[in-house]
Structure formats: structure tokens, C-alpha cells
Image (cartoon, rainbow, N blue to C red; front, side, top):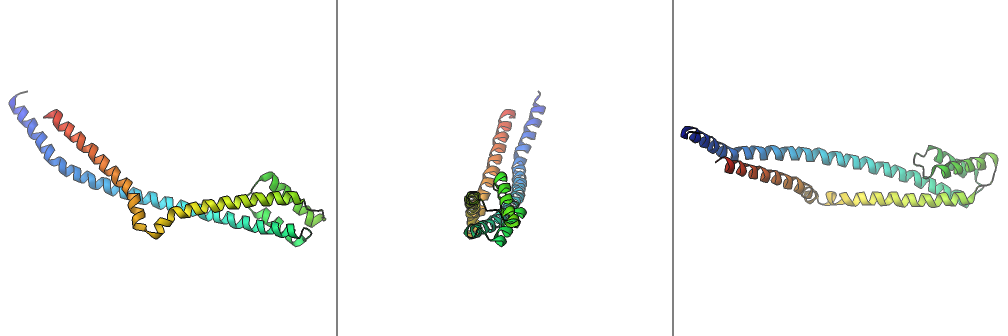
Length: 191
């Protein structure tokens, strides 16, 4: 390479080196805006899906509580046809099934009780009652765990979003650090 080419090459590298600060700033702005937009979409969709999940769990909990109270009433008054019919209707329209086989057995037993005057299988009722209690506890634990996670957001939203944004900021700084290292390697290799 002759001296004119070397001077031109050095001038190009110096120009690139001077302009890289502008490029870094523009990249920082682009990355910052993109990360904030992505963070907003992610947190909004996560919050929306969490809200749907919690509402579904609350509906399941309400259904199970109704069935639980009907089972308790039926176990206290096993010859009550109105309680048996009410339980049967609740079990039919309940979408949250504890155990398919036990659910079907209980449906059959309750139906036979109020339609054909057959005695109730009390062991089946108490077993189903115990399983419903376990499911109610499980759903309550899920709801409480999820509510405690977002309790911080309701109490102190600034602190909550600062925690959430810290990872985005770390990612941006990490990418800028990589760009700076690549720039310094590029300048060192070609100068």
C-alpha cells in the first residue's frame, strides 16, 4: 500500500471513530425505545393473561364452594330431595371436575337418590367432600400466591416497575458494552 492509500485509510478510520459516538448514541436510543416498547407489550400481555387466569380460578373456586356447601347440606340431611336435586344440577353444569370417575359415580348416586328414592352412598359423598376441600385449598393457594406477587405493584408501582426495568437497562448496557468492545477491536486492528 502506498502512503496515499494509507493516509486515506487512516482518515476513513478516524472519521468512523468520530462518527461512532453518534452511532452509539443512536443505537442506544433505538435499543432503549425498543426495549421499553417490548417491555410494555410483555408486561401488558402478562398482566392480562394473569388476570384471565385469576378470574378463571375464582370461577372454579365459586363453583367448588357451591358444590361443597350442597354436599354438606346433603350429608346433614341425606333424605332431602331438594338438596340432592340442587347438587345434581350443580355437578352437571360444573366445568371443573375433581375426578371423572368419582364425579360420575356421585352424579349417578345423587340422581338415583332423588329420582328413585335409593339411599345415598355416604362414603362417596365424604370422599368427594374431602377432595373438594383439597382443591379449594389448592386454588386459594394459587390465588394468594399470585396476589402477593402483584401486591407490590399495587402498593408501590414505581418500585415494582424499577425492578422490572432494571433487567432491560442491564441488557442495554451489556449490548452497548459489546458494541464498545467491538469498536475498540476494530480500531485497534485496522490502525
